[in-house]
Length: 365
Image 1 (cartoon, one colour):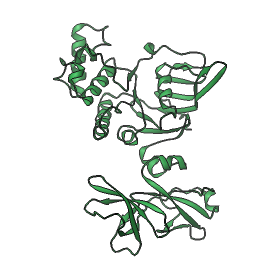
Image 2: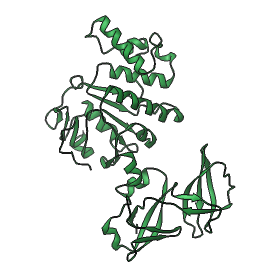
Image 3: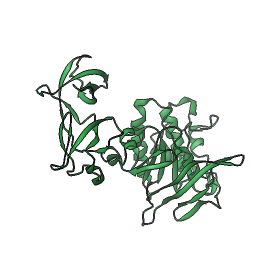
Image 4: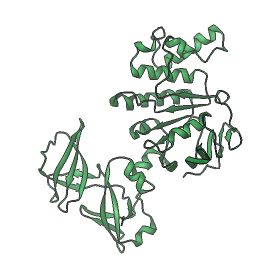
């Protein structure tokens, strides 16, 4: 769980507990969860289905009351155990998973739906500006069903941004799109949000989306944030075994600590236990047996290497293959290999270890 920083933050979610009552029983879904964002930052709650990430988003939007804790935006308290400001008074925009566009309204009218307090001229100017921002300047007269899924997502984003909210919430906004489109659109949405300096929170189960759009990511498990960090740190400096296993592609290889030389020995070779940016928990140094996290980019194909591994699975990814390789001991590792090295299943290939970051965990009993 991440602590709230001392400096004032635009969005502060402080030790919130959220749940629902079934009869006399209270079923808690979110447990003492905290995170914070500065103005203009994009945060992401990342986790598997059922971890509580959407419940947190609903609590920030005002759709779920708090059992305990506090949510504040721009210094104004929105929720506590004793008070929940109505959603319409929070100045928070929401992009829903299904976009929730009005099918009977044009694209322009969808975007301008929340601008009724403006004059017709002001509303027209604001809608035109937003459609230009999301790359749909020429699509205002069309209806939602005439647009692609990616275009509909842009309309939903423009509609949410139109009232200039203090915070934008996005609930799995790319889940209805083709896999190839998700990451590209996530990058474009990030550019749009940065251009208008809008603070935002995204929930997703897809780490590629999270990496493409977020400044800070909270990996969730069982209703808590187990690590709140940058994408780089989540990948290279996972705070615990769950994050290491959940983020990226990798395996845990058994290792033995060489305490006098501050090394860890694994089947692929010897690695410095503590060096540079490596993860080294001093408490782990006393344990002789550890598990070493090996990413797919830590294992390199090398025809001249004396260490041979058998190709047991392969997945073509365009620019490269993801190979599952079996070492002489039977231990399996992953390797990303340029796709012009097309090896057959059962073939033995040379590999070597090139790990810049050493991440170890106590060996599971």
